[in-house]
Length: 268
Image (cartoon, rainbow, N blue to C red; front, side, top):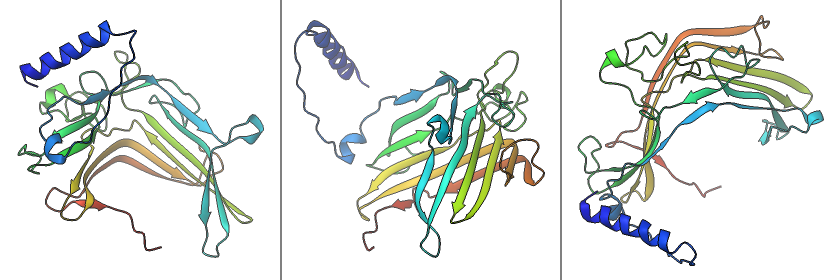
């Protein structure tokens, strides 16, 4: 932002402080892509410290976590109960030990930002681009960590849980589904250890020619261990499971020259 803009912001805050007991009315006005492309603010950084999420399905305790509205090929209702879903510190032992994890940190947070399409790295002249981004990868690998093992030296910035950083920044993720299809019931469980998403982002902008929303999606996903099972309970006692070690996925969907398109089909 230039000096004139900073002065205007300072005057606005001063006016708000002086008029704290006065009613203030304001009107929000829409901005065109051309207007938004000139915005050069720093965006919003999101950091969640000591974060735990845990929810399940247990009607006897007043807990209902259910997905409905799904039907099978015969048109019969399929009810999916989410028996457990959790995000917690690494070492959660299939969600049995839930402790806080840090998601992002102040020097490398999750971000919501408005990018200038005129930037050569973006390549969308005259467009404003909305970006949702995970913590960035580092250019100097001496300052980073291995994306899988967490050992010192690597592209990823998210730190593993250790004596120095107890919470760590690599969460365990778990999902336990009970699928009821008529009289048949089955289970699907997914457990992810020390998940890392560094370098992932979603960028959105309007395509005037197509009159649709366009997108560029990058998903980086690393985990030293992913387990998928069909037992009634997700735990170490499940004898029927698929285990993937040192899992790495770097998925790219869409680009500025050939983007994904997001629209609504009103034909049905």
